[in-house]
Length: 380
Image 1 (cartoon, one colour):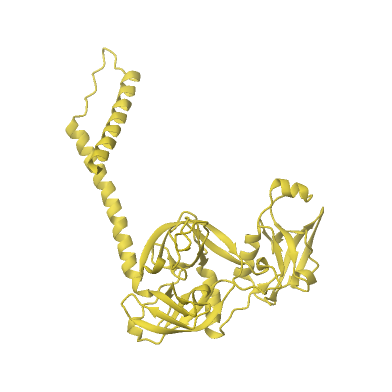
Image 2 (image 1 turned 90 degrees about the horizontal axis):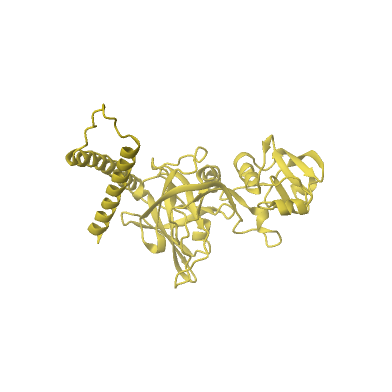
């Protein structure tokens, strides 16, 4: 079957080549005084094709070798995280970050755990202690007591220079299949997700986590907490979630090509606090905004623009409320940076500010534009 397809493709390519030559002959016929051009022999054509095939094959081989080398470089630093709960055992992924035995995973992987067990690629098993977690970014830090010779920390990179279209690699344990590798690209940046554990009296969007990487690398149940890597083998994100409406027969989510990872710059900011203090205090503005505004919605609201953060909810007594921001306001600028969306605002707050900082917002209310200074609080 494969040979027949190859022959059909070869015939199609040959037909296209002949068609192109025929067009060239029709439009560039030599005059009587011009010498006929020498026709390429089949041997020459086959030689050119062989050279092209060799170049193509060499390129693919080098890409393959690079992927194989990358996997060998990082595989011993990626672990399976087995969470024992009252309902049974669930499986996630984590990765080693230092020789002290610290391992990063997702909060939702170890939530409700009675005990946590870590399985290394070399077969070593160890009981892990949860030393800190953050439900907003869905991060948790574990610690294991094993010989340093058995630990292979992964290199943490940077997410500030990530480009959309960049090739990425995910390694994890989808459906318990340990050490599985998948590839894809960065589909987008700066996505936001609601917190896993907002206070029940407040909107989840008031506690949104920003600066998520969107990728089409295959991420499935069990990949949570695993590394998203660049081609240098550096961790640029922690795989967190997928967006899908498809399920298998067991009720598990199925990959849809839309996955999300916590950007490593956020991880680098949060994890040291989780190790030292067990938690991280986020800057709190105390408002929720529409993800986007259509032209129709903007016209209905009396707005002459669709960019910015349209405030839908303000936490009474929170920083935004105390500064005078109201539902219906449009936030268009933060400290000189134009804000196009709610995701922009959350990502900037996460990346650049801490509780107690005072920020300057530019607000549009009706036809009036004015500055507002807000002292950021800590999330309640």
